[in-house]
Structures are given as structure tokens and as C-alpha cells.
Image: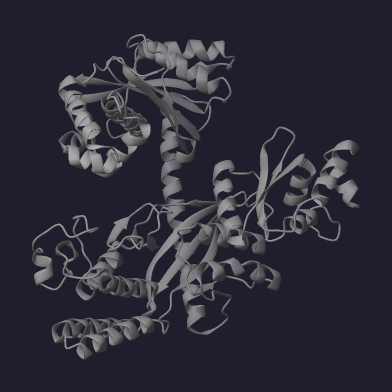
Length: 633
């Protein structure tokens, strides 16, 4: 089949010529390409060091593809490209666009859990170490993830004992205290808050922490030994003794770990297991010769995907995120072709040193890979048990509500407001009894003429279900009136028989406590949910999650409005100065307490204007807060 005929499967002659001509004009430079269908939907996102060669390969007869890719090629109507400076930039952009569009023909990585990381604020003058569950592109260095809380605590305990980093929340940009706290006295901090150390001396300690967490123990020992000799030569014997103690503590840690695996560099082992239609990836993290943790992730859109394509997509998405830590060695469950290994050269470029991707067949590395396999198999067994429990609960719910089938997909809608101020709504989705957060939706209610839950719910029904099908079960937080309002608008939108899959849930206070009532269309008397029934737990969980999501959104809008209602109404303060003031002082209350000198310095204005702003801000303080009914448009 020629290039022309291959494209012609899904396009006419004029279109195929246009696409081929566009490919001929693509640059031979790094970048990202988006394959789109006739409706503009993104089918696939990919990256390449040569856009022209990579995109052209999809339409060459000499390059056979799987049935899945062939089907995608037949649907291509347009190809959009983004040129980048390097392959690393292309990788980062590819990950961003995959998350944004979630294309049908990309293998999609979905993290199963959010594990904690250690965050070293490397971009600060005096770096600090903290635990976080969110990895950002903020200049900090992240280590982890740590699936085992005990391992994380042990790591922090060792670091706090060996490396005297500051652990307080005192600003360290410049000395602010006359004398340091007790942490300095017990040699757990260098005292930057009181000017008792230099940025260079502190940075050497932070470098030791980084080497330790990266598993670069040889570099760490060299660093500590050189530091010890430097202090001894300058006759600073007390500091030399402290560094010596750190050196000896690191040696003891390494001796304890030596009984495990004889690898002092960071290493990951990857294994895949099948759970129904889902591929589960297990990543085992080995640091300093010990298993430091593991992480599980789901891979979707894996139908008709071969092993090489699956592993390549996983490596790019898992390690391609900007803040991801890449180990020195990655053990994989099967060998990769040389061209794929060459395409992974971005890993070494990103890490700044050689990264090896190996398929071990014997020895200690094979034992680590086998351990990853055992963990992957155990993870699948655990998920199947959980899935069975969820399926049982869904079946109980089907029987209780007399539904025609098990409600695999459940939506719940909740309204949140204070009086008639800033009304919002949430729509959460549960799939197979579990939260599906990628399908959560939040709404800013447009109806603002009083507190009318019926009208607000009807608005959400119209805005969401005018172009979305009804789920297997739609739960409304409210009573019979709310249920009727939703059913009326759903019928108007053309949904057939919505009464078969819509209910409402409301609490009823009684002498025995709070009873959950279920209102079902066509039944005047609500059903009472048994307190310990599996269906009760599931429905209450879904309703509470919708309520939490709505409250969180409402609170964020209210805080934003209250802040802006004070500062933006002050003459001389626009959006830019408002952001500077809030970012610097941390809150509106702190701005109100600031002196004219501080405002002058932060907002970069004259003293006269600063004093005028100070008076105006004080006058626009919380005691003169606008009534909540004054909602900004």
C-alpha cells in the first residue's frame, strides 16, 4: 500500500494530498505532534527528535503498525506540531498535552495513589527538607515516592541526626534573631536565622543531604572527609569534630544496609501485571541497597499494545515529568530493542549522567526484579479483593433501589452557598464504586436571585446533561422537591426515562439519630437506608464526597472575594500590587497589620503614597466588610 492509499482509508483525495504535503514541510527538529480527527478531537500525542521523520513513519508501508495504530492513522484528518528547543523540552510538553487531552490512542498512566515525597528547597539560599504529596516544577528537588511511612520516618531520623539543616519556619533570607533556638545548641542546626553560618557552608550540608537521598554515598563520604580536613586545617576543631561525627554516622548506616543488595546507587525495578482490562505497573525503589518503597500506577488504552510500546510509553510518562527523580539504573521485565534504548537518551540528558535501562537474567538484579514481580502480583490480588467488595456493594445497591443493572457509573450533585452568596455546585463521579476524580466537575451558579435550590439544581442539570449522557445512577443531595426539579429538566433535555436512574438522598433526624432517606420517583414515601447496609455506606460516601468538593470550591471563592473586596477597592492598588502584597505578607490580615514602610518596600511606591494606602487599607478592613450579598459578577 502506498503512502497515498494508506491515508486515503479515512480521507478523500484532496485531503490526503493536503496532509502529505504538510508532512513534507515538517521540520527535521525536535518537537511534539498531535494527530486529530475530522471533529478536532486529539487522537494521539507524540514526541520526536525529528518531527518530519517520525510523523512520516506512520504512513510508510515499510513500517508495519499494530491494529490500534492503523485504526488511528485511518482517522487522521489534521496534524498539529509544536517545535521545541530540545528533546527534553519535547518530552515535558508531550506529558503536559497527554494530561490535558487524554487521547484515545495514547497509553495513559494513572497513578493509583498519592505517596509522600521529600522536598529539598534547592532553589533557596538556605534549603530545607519537608514532606509533601504534590510534586511541582518550583525549583525544588524531590525524592521518593515513599510508600512505606516507616521508611520515610527512618530516613528523616537519619538526616536530622547527621545533617544540621534548619527545620523551623523562620524566614532565612536574612538573619532576624539575636540568638538561635535550642536546635543550634544541640548541633541540629547551623543557626542561619542568627547569622551564625554562611550560605556556602550551609549549602555544603544541603549537598550532603542531596547525595544521601540520591544514594551517592561515595560522593557523600568524600564531601564529608574534605569538609572535616578543611575545618582541621583552619583550626576550627569543634566544627571538624561535628563533621567527623556525621562521617561516622553515615558509615554506620551503610554498614547496616550492606546486608541487603550490594548497590549503593539508586535503582528502580519495573514489572507489569494484568488486572482485567487494566495493566498495573509496579515500580520498586531501591536506595542505598535497601528497598525504600514502591509505587503502583494504572495504564489505560492498552488494547492491542505490544510489550515494547507499553514499556516505552510508561518510561516516558513516569520519568518524563519535570520533577521526577531518575535513578542511575532501571530494571525492566523484558529486553528493549536498540532503537528504543537510543530513544531513551533523554533520561541521561535530564539526569546529567548516564542512566542504564537493563533486563537482568541472573544475580542480585534479577532478584530485585523478581521482588518487583511478586509485589505486582500481590497488588493485583489486593485490587481484585477490593473490587469484589465494591461489586458486592453495587449489587446490594441495585437490589435496594430495584435498578435494572449494577450502577457502574454514579454521579452525585450537591449545592453549596451561604445565604444567597457565591452559590456553587459540584458533580462527582464514582466508577465501579471508587472515586473517579478525573471526571469531577465544579460549577459557579449563574442564578443569583435568592436561595433557590430547585432552580440551581435545574441549572446544573441543563448545563451538564445537555451534552452528557445520564450515568447508571444520578444521586441528588436533597428531598422530593429537588428530585422533581431535576427530573423535569432532564425530561425537557430529551433523556428517556430518567426516573429509572435518578434518586435523591436526605438526612432525617429522629430519636435514634440521623437516618438516611432515599427518595425514588413514583414513590411517595421515602425508603430508610439501614444503618450498616453496604448500599448505605456507598451512597453516604458519594454524597459526602460531593459535599466536600462543593464546600472546598465555595470556600476558595469566598476567600478570594473577601481578599479582593478589601484591597482592590483601595485607591492606588491594582491587581499587580494586590498580588505582591498578598504573596509577600501571606494573608489579608497580615497586610492590614503592615506598616507604611513595609508597604512602601513591597509595593515599590513612595512614602507619601504608602502612608495614604496604609490609611485606606485600615479603613477598608474587616470591620467595614461588604455584605455577602454583594457578589462580584
